[in-house]
Length: 516
Image 1 (tube, rainbow, N blue to C red):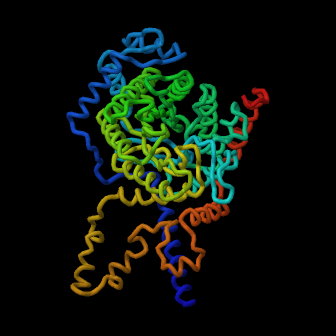
Image 2: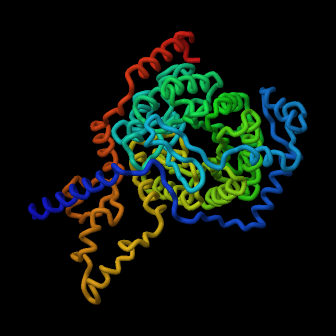
Image 3: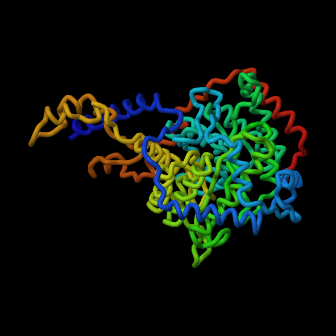
């Protein structure tokens, strides 16, 4: 028995080594080879587009405390009534289609990590915005900057995640007016993948752009002297049908510098939009059109992404729910509307309402992740780590979701119909009544034939029990510790690092020592 266990363990180690070797050549992002899915008909899509234009024309969108937005829209031909903007039918769509790119490259400081956003690409991004973190040993607690660094390191080491993300958790141990420096610097120093910038104030967006200029140096501009897109940022509508000055100010800064913005209505249907899928998608489209049009008026051609975060609320308790059929319908329909508009689309993620990385977390997250892949989402924020409706970033769930992300990547490759994929030699060699375990084709392909999960256990009960009888979360927690212990920071030019730290020190000194 002991010898058998050793052989099995050796086999697992060989598989892990083979998987590590294969991942070293992991692509910078997913290129989908499978068709997209939408269950809305052409007539239904046209109806939603018509109704969204009716919302824009008759009801309008409020742009609060931001006169520059009102002036831009007035000059473009919109009707301004106080802070309410009403748009002639088709105006927003025409502005967007005139200049917004259908796809773009977000450049990373390591060029091999640069990603394409739009078209047939899918970029998988960690979860965003949680004030709490959770792990098996310490439970639920407020996040701090060390947690932030840890999640950036885990994303950097996870080949199935293509992006460092943004506010992977909120480091509440740092002053609100200064923490953005540490967050942006963490992405720059501890990863060489693309990253997101700060949007909590216009001046924090300016800091992000200035730090990005220092990081990229002469590579910040292309051969024509135009700013490369090196940062992408999340601009949420204050649904229903409102944009506030914080988001508008950040969007203006980034667009002016040719950096990408994800204009994303944040919807909990039943509370912030109608209870129906069609009504919710209509509102999402109207809000997104208005926000993206604003970006194009600030700087025509600045990269913009049609985003949506849409879930539902329980009609019994008012609590948000995730992984249910209606948000998937919203996702599929909005993705198709983005393609019809001609801009990239953001949605999806490992969304769930569970308090622990348990079965509920897994099946709710899988429902959203798989819907997002089938819908053809280009920028999949919240791919990994999300718990408790976004309030919590979980170490164990992060690894479990990253494992699911690897499966999505394999699925998105589509069918292999090469000579090797057809396997006709194997069929001829084995013939009727035998097995394929020892045939030449199997021997040539066994290391890469099937996806091998990094957290699932498929061994016998006896072996599982002898190895500690761990569940998925416990296995993921063990792997988190291993990864963080093995982490090695990517190289950075010491002069660039020194310049970043000097900028941060100078800017922080300009603020009073206050948490407000």
